[in-house]
Amino acid sequence: MKNKNKGFTLIELLTVVIIMGLVMVIAIPSVRNLTYNNSQKKYRIHEKIVDEAVKLYVKNYRGEFNNETADCFNIPYQALLDEELVEEEGITCSGSVIVRKRISDGYNYEYYLNCHDEAGTLMHESDPIPLACKGVNGKFKVEYTLKQDNENGEPYKEGEWAKHIYAKYNSSSPYNLPIKDMEYSLDFINWIKMENEEHTYTNYNGNIFVRAVDEGENISEATRHLIKGDSLGPEFRLVANEDVLLSKDELEVSIDKNSVKDNGVGVDVNGEIYSFDKGESWVGDTSKVLAVGTETPIYAKDHLGNISIVTTQTLHACTSTALKNGTQGTAKAKEILTGKEAWVNGTKVIGSMPNNHGVQKTMNPGDIYMIPEGYHDGTGKITVTTLDANTKATAAEGNILKGKNAWVNGKLLEGTMPDRGNLDWKPTKSTTYEVPAGYYSGGTLDSSDAYTAGYNEGVIQGKSSSTVTLVQLGTAGASPNAGTSTYNLTELGYNTTGVTESNFFATMDLNVTDRSETGMEYLKVSHSYANGTVTFHINGSHSGNNTSLGGTITFYFIKVG
Image (cartoon, rainbow, N blue to C red; front, side):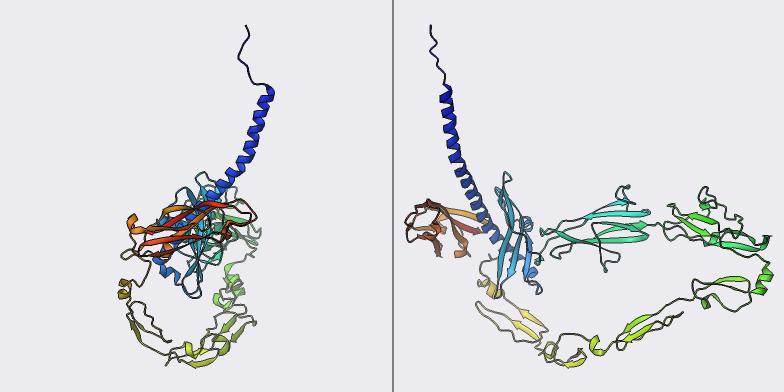
């Protein structure tokens, strides 16, 4: 009996595969274009929301934007999220909004946003953010790591002593700009730029303040840490007993314990911290007898193991009486130049006279300079500047209050600026007051009545900030002379207080068959608003000789509050 179940032949299977391949080649570009268009549309809608949020942000922090030295400002996008002025749905963005002052009045807004969809796909990529704009309300800090000695050392615990403290710093700017410099200060006044993000501190005991500066000259909060570094050994001196004569040219030499001190971690003067054999052994006995003239090194160390070395100097032994009689003199330590030594009446005197070398000093007119006590080598110079050079300034008579005077570029100027006292003004709606030039000592500008009358349009009374919500009113087909679409907000249940034409816009998703012509040239959408009713007008001249125009127009209402 024959089997009636019949399978597909190889030719039939190949035919099906080829047909499916052709379908995929045609369909995939269309799907990609549709996905791209939807992403761009979602970004444009989100940018509209951000635009309204930024305007509310500027109103809430208007004092930050009255800086006379800046004409543009950098608002981090994150600040809008933190203030809950923007909610992200299906889109995640980062970056900044640049607010620029207009020459006449108001602001222009520029958006530097990088946005991704829920799958992490890039929807919009911005140009580089301008560097010269002043940052607003962005706070950032410096993070740091401290190690002992170097980057591979043990972690350093602040407030404890170490020979060297290695520090590594990092920071990121909320204004989405690169970090330009790291700076540190010992007094929070004078700041020193680091060569890079790493720094090693040594021989310092106190606070270190560190801050970051980004490419826009925005400065971070200062980070403080306590450093105690000491890589220097203790100070000490040797003493010789001249009355104990061992042999010719040999004296008893020992360490003066009372002279041993350390300005860093400290030293145990009674401990086993002394070595007379180049560090092979350490003892607490300081009365080691040495043969003077051998220049033997003597060591002492502090609590961190930092070592200092003092070498015995060649001395010629003689009785104390003979030495005294042979070295009679009158000089005292302060009468011998510092760093120099001399024998006076049997005693070696170490000079303490200050060496001022050649003093270089520039004085301003009227200054008094006290010549420092001590030695001057004859190369010093004291220069007095001229009054003109010392009073360089830019003010004119009109910049100085009348009845006052001041020196400018060597001349005494009498002020001509009028003193107008207090300025008190209470405007009504739609009034303007021209303020005369001059100095005002105070006054009151009371705009409460004008505010109540609606003087500040666009701000909802009783609220310092509002929530922006995007409402889709409806759609229409995209074709020339499509007519109008009208929506009554009151009937739709929306509050029309403060609503103006700026609360509405439309987007067009067009299909144009001829790519050499664009449908935007033939179709325009405008709108008008009055008495709670908005009307969208759709019109165009023609569809072009070779153009077929279609698609969808969507109408939106930006609801505030």
